[in-house]
Length: 218
Image (tube, rainbow, N blue to C red):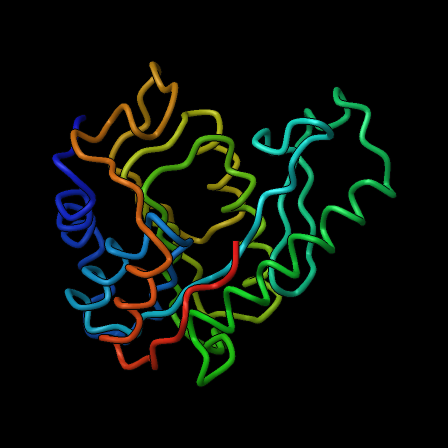
């Protein structure tokens, strides 16, 4: 399945998530790409919009290669293949601390007037535009589960098939529009997959009742 853009994918997801309309779901986007999609879903379902902040942990000497992730609470999720890169506990601790500092900076910029919205007792829909390794989504789910939501739902346009099976173990419901065998990268399934900037994230949250703030450093 090829999507025109993120808005197209969000509109299709909204139809699949119709059972949650009117239940005041908490729609949490994984920034930055998922924010435009989450805004559409929150509007369509009559829910509340916020972000769930997670950062990948980069491999030694290759920061673009995710060996795991960390969320705002400090929960660290390490990929099974991380052992192939010889990472030590000391390296993981240092990398997690560095990425948590980035998370604090982004939270201060994205939602400066309030802390993360409490998911306790809520239907929580975690949105990402697409999921490759799943380390970021799984870390987000683990952190949110500890806060006792009534139901934890994942919504995504496209996901790698093996990753989808892992995510289904951690969520109460998964709505994925496509899990193709020929998955190589999320962007291959979007005609328009332009990057979403921090400024766009801040603007979307501002229109949803958040007070805009300067862009975070870095």
